[in-house]
Length: 309
Image 1 (cartoon, rainbow, N blue to C red):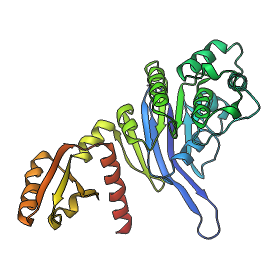
Image 2 (image 1 turned 90 degrees about the vertical axis):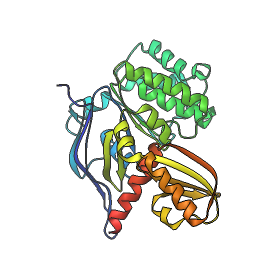
Image 3 (image 1 turned 135 degrees about the horizontal axis):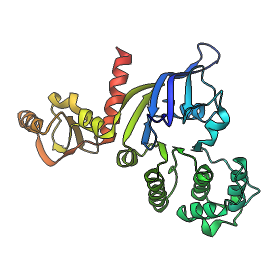
Image 4 (image 1 turned 30 degrees about the vertical axis):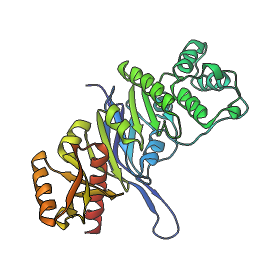
């Protein structure tokens, strides 16, 4: 049986501060198999970037172990880092080099010579060819992010971690980037994605872990999460006050619209009956399958309720 691309066992990270301190990760365990397209989702402050930093060797866990392609990120860090390419959230770049020079230097970090053919291919797929000789400081924010993606890919790592890779970039880049990343995944590369664009995660990721306050609150195949938790979404525009009987099902409300989560389509009649009983007039009605955003909101709300209890 092949080794996991990434394995985290009981990983905790605690930062010492004045007072009680801060726990960023609280016993996270997961496996990402080779060749997976895996999503790591959660609200701001959930611990996603902390976990990625530990995987990349930029931070050390307070407790637990992490391996990349079987290499411990602490005791075998050289091989672990060779197996990993990370696109960070922040725009980090050297302003004194051109795009091509930046990618050649990155190749040198991994001992790669004569890597120009692959550099050219990466730049072409990320629409950077026209900027190959431009200085990094002269690039727009979106172009700089493309270079960060290229840097992560320049040594052809088997495992690629994308931490918010499309934040602040245009639609054209997103489409080109995902086309290229899908190709890499088809060729056997393992992809780990964090994103706040949940429609991207739903479309791309075969399996998803959701973090909340440093803990995993869901870990399953994307289809299984949708089937188990999402149900049916009903969107209404009502004339009159919404029935109190529907309040427990509300997931979103505003601008005169009411969105409800139902366990199945058979419950739509329950909603209609409640509106009739309350004397409401339904001006618009839409029924559809709930999506990953609904699952995400449900899990985060459920977790808050458990904490409050």
